Amino acid sequence: MIKIGFTLINHFTPGTNVNRELPLMLDQVRAGRDAGLHSLWLGQHYLMGEVPYFAYTPLMARLIPETGNMVVGPCIQLLPLHNPVAVAEEAATLDVLSGGRYVLGVGLGYRPEECDAFGIGWKERAARMTEGVEVIRQLWAEEAVDHQGRFYKVDGLGTSLKPVQDPGPPIWIAAVAEPAIKRAARIGDGWVILVTVSYSELQKQIPMYLRTVKEAGRPVPPEIPITRELHIADQNASAWDECRDGLNRKYGIYNSLGLNSSEGASTSIEEFAQDRFFVGDKEAIKDEILRYNEGLGVNHFIMRIQWPGHDHDTTMKCLRRLGEIVAEIN
Image (cartoon, rainbow, N blue to C red; front, side):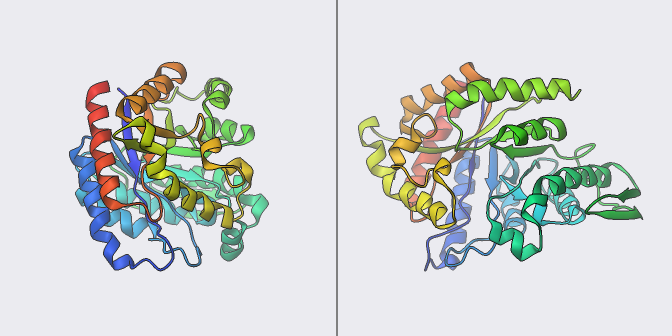
């Protein structure tokens, strides 16, 4: 089965009246659910300045009752910034609230300002994440945990609130660079492929990831998830005209946060989108999904279909069309 979900935007253009946004967000979640989409995801960031950003955990808890049977989770949660005890207990709670439909997606993050604010050394992120994943798994599976690590300590304590899923929700790890992809293969249950990675790059990276999984003695992951920007238009020729402004705003925000050209900040959005974004009519999008599935083995698509300032009605239409694609390809 090819699974298709979407990331709900939880950040907005400066000056947005956020009190207006929650009902629209709920409408989008229900539309995705009713369209037969498989998963719902939220991002996480801190100290975004003029960009209003809903906090991940309380927002997800509010959305879960609207999600039906959809898988839910963060794409991604900034694990190095947090004590894994807190992440483990929050994830267990959200797994219970969702009836066992939770996936914990984690990553390093890319903003030094966030590390500074949390008192985390920039070069410690990878080691913190590796140790954090270990502690989280222990807390989910064991009644009492003795862990004396470089960053975290648990002295014979545990939590009685266990996840519904045994031994716990899957942990998916976002990664771009080769060392990070190999780390995801060694310690994670899945690798989240980010939108910045092109099809041609994945032709090398996915086999490398799967080889490393095998070398680490871990089971082959049942899902290979990927994030893609998506816009589905009535006509292929008009697709870019409908979404260019919204994508320029989004990647302008990335530029303001200090991301470099590899994240699409210093080239035209159309140039960066080549072999990365899904923009076109319904048939063109369906063809791209099948190309990634048949050529790369990708089988869980996490679509980013709305951007700061992007029209709500357009997003709703896109969700319905995406549901039609789900029905046609499965």
